[in-house]
Length: 199
Image (spheres, rainbow, N blue to C red):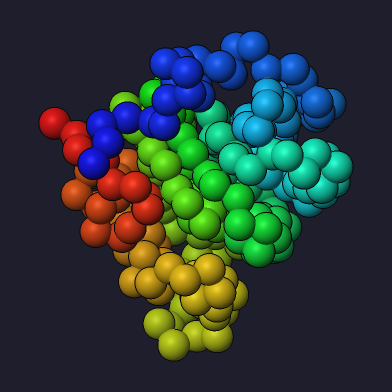
């Protein structure tokens, strides 16, 4: 058991973020940006199609990177792009990690779960809620057997995550709200592959 994020040479990965070299910064400061230090890529911002494509291309040209570190990751503005990027992350067998002070919410949690190895920290916020489409419809507006759920259930099946997590997220909070997962919930839904011991 570990009580915090993986430590490299006595310094947490989150602390090393301050020394990373910017590799890609979106023109929109809220969109996904990317920095790299050694084998760790640091991600911050909302995920959309163009920014995730740029980050994917950068990762493909930096094959020594094996860990994606999530700093401030408030979600996605394009679920389809997010799930496509997440499947690519899963197929590439990246480690995903978040550290002390990290905020990982909404679609970014789906992306985080794509990691083959998933490392976390007790002092972070992992937020989930129901989705909403461009026309304002959410899971509360459709039946539980509606095929629309399959886009998410198929994704979780593809990455080896129990579909029960999807049903948990859409019932945990309305789209305009956020439920921050407890330590017990993080353990129950196997958000991490390296469990934490948190007081």
